[in-house]
Image (tube, rainbow, N blue to C red; front, side, top):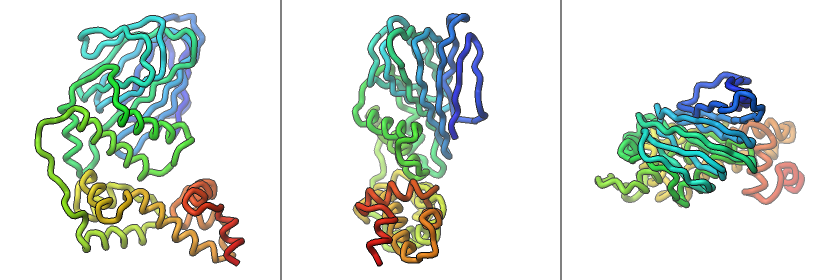
Length: 308
């Protein structure tokens, strides 16, 4: 679900209601300014994300982390400062590509003066995945302001493309990225405790049950949580074990199974492309077309024509 926010003076007007896990609170410092602030938000089962684009203006902001907060910054400020938990302030001007992490119970606040370009902040508010105790490890990750991590940045950029509408709009894909962020944060903090390892992948019984579940639910949303529960593993362990067993991630496998079923249904001439898309779990014909072309090298229409 998308939301557009417009800041006018001290007021924030919302076009729709949403209950994300957290949000950045903004306040216009100049009551006479008329520079809009645009926000898009999406929410999943245990985390949410917001993409904020800011025209030249001066804003105060605050984050009270009732969920863990992770942000990717793309702006240069002519003035301003930022603090976490009221500690040492940062006045770093160029924070393009820099990251900020604020754990649950902490807070970040400050102000920025944007003067020369459209700026952006992409923030993810991370809760705890159900049935996955490993995620609690990020409670030990300390707050960090304007740090760098190529792996976390790359994952955030993929999730940002989902919110922007240019990426893959699939629950399992977004959930996989969220889980990857948790793992990368834990890894970056170099937590000093042992972690259980998955050895040998899934058992034959676990793999058969997972494949049967995917086959039965191919027309519906299939989440990593669903598949991990079928296998009786935590989500982190399931993703690693599945890839060890099959050679691809659970998300990639589900996509390939959807396309395999779509190929079979395209032989049924009475079904429209839209009917086929819905039958194999895509939201519409456009999404099927994008994935089909990427995996098969042709559109569903061309595949159906050439199969005659």
